[in-house]
Length: 139
Image (cartoon, rainbow, N blue to C red; front, side, top):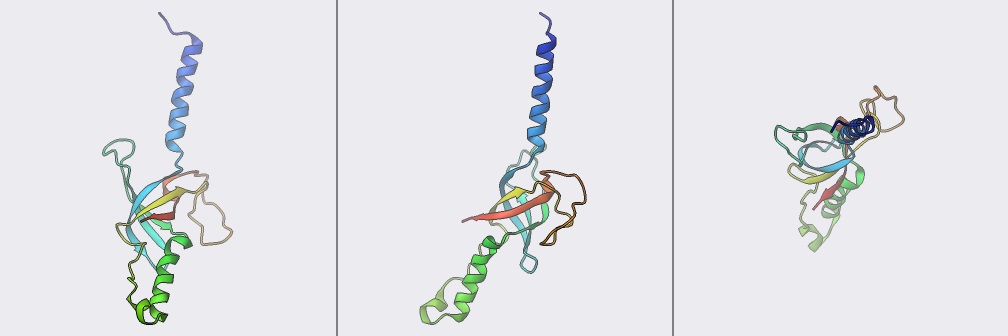
């Protein structure tokens, strides 16, 4: 039995839809490979790994890390430095460190020129894996 034009169209649209969904990055878990405390950026590696397949994990460099993610570390260090007696014994264990599991989201537009304020996008790139931002830490 031959395929109708409607069946062919439906099959084509399904393939286009699946490709579009795959190419639109939204969010996923990753691990921190390197963290720059001065610039609050991290190199991360997504935890989904389909070696040699569509989801082969690679390192995403210099992802901005949002304030709530590293604020805990800074606040803990300040409490320890200013604390008295028992407060001096608080563990300084950092949450943002190599090996930590974080959640990353992918910005709607490219972040190449972003430095913290209004910026001009450098391309029409959208939801790209290179535009990841660390938004949370899984403890």
